[in-house]
Image 1 (cartoon, rainbow, N blue to C red):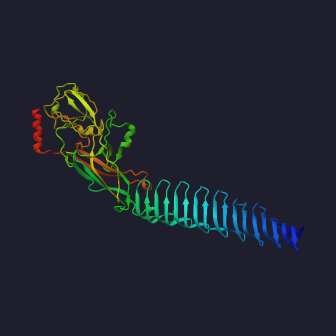
Image 2 (image 1 turned 30 degrees about the vertical axis):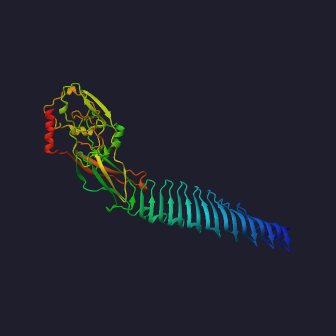
Image 3 (image 1 turned 180 degrees about the horizontal axis):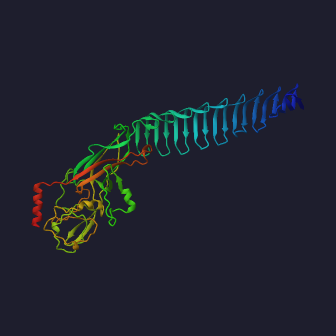
Length: 488
């Protein structure tokens, strides 16, 4: 039955002159229309409410209102909701799909997300927890797109209160949050192994290390052949020890002043591509080139603090191709700067033996802002280590005046050897003994090599200047040595 009314047009069932049963009603402005069940002149039961722009609701009605379960579609935004309604509003449990791919599944309170729910944003990040007025509020957990995971408290869509953050790289933070940042007491175990346990302010440690400091004087002295130790602290801008941090990886290096030689002469044993990596700037007004260090391991029968080198061992700077066997070998006293090739002279024949290289000092991890590098010694330099050649221009004072060697009879070979001329004994040199390096100035550098850098910051290196002084033998030992050479 069709009924024309000033309030609109209705086609459908009528009972006692009221819309009752199934029918189609078009509103006077023709923007809205309803098709579905009626009771006593009101929309009641299952129906579909359509709008001219394409929006619609399809589901349950009660006494003229949208009430119960249904589907709502908004043409202007492209969003769609499927779930419970009350008085025309999203109320109860439902699923809201947004046009950009965001999806919320959970509780609503008269049109807003309130209660417990799960929100998956357009980037695939998932939040499960409490909501209030469309915001993350209360306890909840968040799975981020790159694999990080947070579980804890939220306030107005921000992490605030107590929470645990597990980062994709393996780093872990547990503690207080405010405004989505670490704030308050908290502990971080960084993926590099660094641990900070203390107060945080706006995402950074309150007692943050800003520099490395080598304890003691900036310029020090050490006797050649003696091992030494270096103590290092992590300090903040106020010069205070940062006890709250542990695990930062530090490396110790040494160097000598880099001197550029003439263009026709190679000024380094390195190739050009390796030279830049071997050089480093110093606070002493010059660039240094790396010099090898080693971890000192004393011989079983030799005390650690022994600075007296064995006088029976003579080490050559460079190997010599000896063409004239008449050279007085017993009176040649070369500087002890050699590589890892050792051997003995049998007449004019040199028999080399290769020994295991000495190991560099291992990197150290700080503990409560402190670390010490113990028993460090200078190692043998590589072949043709030209920076030391500059220091060798002065002839050795110990070279006997009776020793004359024709330059034509010695080839300028650059391989390094150790020669021990001690009568019948041919005992090899222990490469872990501290070498009697050439006296002079050596730069010691301690650098932060933590990987990856803690909180994306690498601390600047620390330096000291180590002056190596020559070993002064006692008068008795000097006389004995002179007597041995004279007797030969």
